[in-house]
Length: 487
Image (tube, rainbow, N blue to C red; front, side):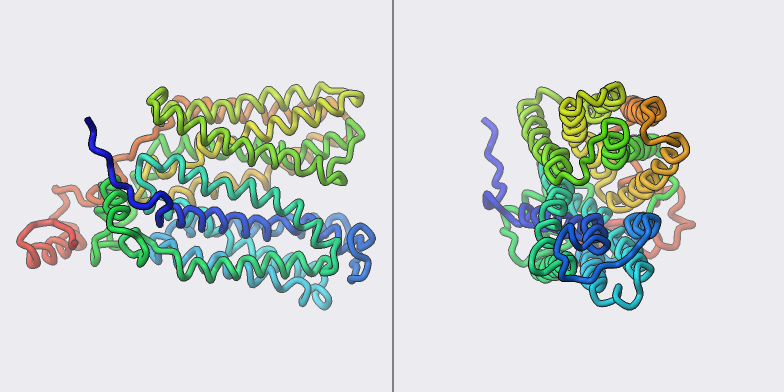
């Protein structure tokens, strides 16, 4: 009979850290997406609360405001992983969310004298700060999640994406129409972010052994399931082990993940941004003016994320599928099913609006499986460098939402042309299909050789590596063992 493992309290510190990550994504996504409601309210006060200033901005100026966030967001994805490794997830995440929240409070104070340009500039800098977030999320998950719970806890934290997007649609509309008007959008979202930062300062810890509140049983349980990551918890050595850039950049599983996440970003940006435009132009149905229709896809996505989570837990615990089987099966469902759905939407007529809404909602909902399918794969490949991997992957994936509208603009010269839209959908379906196929063939769910701390210091290079010589001297003088870490 197998002895029962003492995992500590039913709801321990690892669950609290995951909840903090979940809420951080929620508050940041509310601040990220409230601009779509804010721009409408600021340029057409009659749609919300007419007691607040209204601005005469052109369509191009409004588009610049909406896209400006991603200009800054793209820049900091890659350095976010390095900063997280250098200064720790706790400090980097705090700077990220606090910077975004403070900037989110400023538009009501600045737009009156700076116009749309200053709002655009604030959004760029806000995106710059938020770019650090996901590398920190994945690095923190790698530090706190036992291997056996990594899939479940990682997926729970990432459901903040769907929750934050959904809340930004409902809450923003309610606030803008209430007594606070459109300035309330910024005060509420910024205030939530500041409150989260206070909780993060007192409750978060970079590593389990740094937490003031963790029980001995939970600490032992987490450390026992993190044998590789433990080797970086080495006092003077931590932070000095160089990043194995050559190993990372020549790793086929890493490139398979980059391709899969970029393909997902391409298809999802089409589902998110272009389908509503298609339905307005071809099916004569303006979904953006209907809050229910706008929120339905994200409600489906949030609900489906928990369905995927429960199913994956059952399959793993009963050993029906391995982690590799779970990742690749779910990613295939999440990308290939919407690929077929995208093509199907392009053949619907104006008298099939209900079916079009159902298909779009189902496509977005089913796409939620990509979180378990590929988004968490950074932690599988490298618990020690998960933040850096996420920075690389997200940098590539966030170029795509900038490119897809440009391609649509080139292909769709007439928004009412079904044939032109069908070309867009076929291209997106092909990207979905080929990106996942590459991931099926070359994707891996095991820790890679370059993840080990000794990877950068092979024995044959000991004589010519100053860092290794220094570490050997420090270790030898302290406990008589060569190349042992400080405990």
